[in-house]
Length: 219
Image (cartoon, rainbow, N blue to C red; front, top):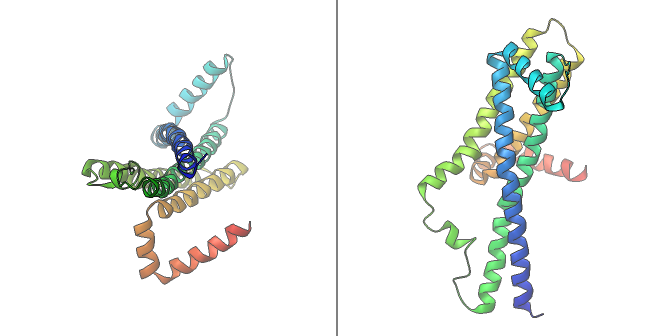
């Protein structure tokens, strides 16, 4: 197998992996939106939401299932965090793969001595449609912000609803902070220009980023 065949096989395999991750990302995004919608439902109509969720769980399991509202709430928080992790993993993988595929395309183009082998890199970005820019902003910037607002309002509501600190409240709070940290990490990872601007104009951000990368690298 010569160099060109090796590059092309690797390119096809890498592109297949990207498409699979993209499919998972889209599915996870829909599930995450549904879970956040459930949190919002609990936020505005808690009794109806909990009753409907319990009925749905019982119907799905084919038996009468008794769960307290607090337990259902913690279960929803846990699912939100899990799906958020899966969504961010696949999204960042897809974004990184685009750059990697671009490098492979350039290598193949050099081997072929042509400049048209750039479907996933230069050709994709050439005169990028404005509507696609808006769509990207919608699910990369607007939706994470909406998720964050829903989560913070819900956890504040929970703290006001409890007369004293309970294990359930602590679990939900841990889940909230976990989700918040993931959202903010995702936001700055996915928006490189915003990250660069913050590092340039807010020195503390750059120091924090360097420190976190060192710590997380050693964990």
